[in-house]
Amino acid sequence: MCDQSNDTPIMSGANAARGDQEGRLRLAGWAAVAFVLVALAVPWFLWRDATVVAGLPLWVWWHVGWMALASVVFYVFTKRAWGIGIVRADAGHGGTTEAEDPVDGEDSAEVTRRG
Image (cartoon, rainbow, N blue to C red; front, side):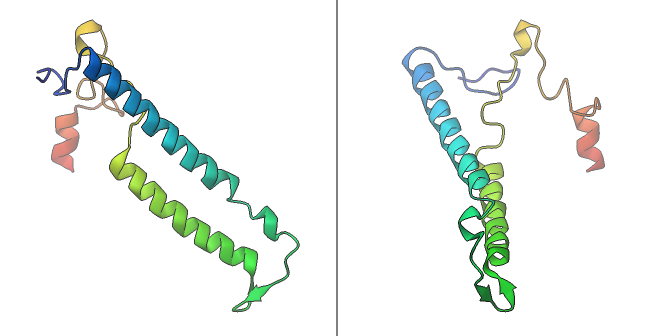
């Protein structure tokens, strides 16, 4: 079943609990990925390493590789988990939906037309 106002599946009972648990696990997984990306962004283990590769210190290559990895991870995040942990208010309970409250205060249909 789908709610006609926002086309999100309606879950109840065991399905809702299972979906909630899966959502929490996904959120925890992405939080762990973000923590690792931040924790290893500064190559503290290379601080006293004077190794030079292709004319540049090894720590510079670490940053080049790390930024490439962070870009790939962010791309995957935007495709698979964008909005995770964000709760959408139900329009029937006085909340708003994306179409009623776009980011810039404009009608979403108008934004779509302008492209």
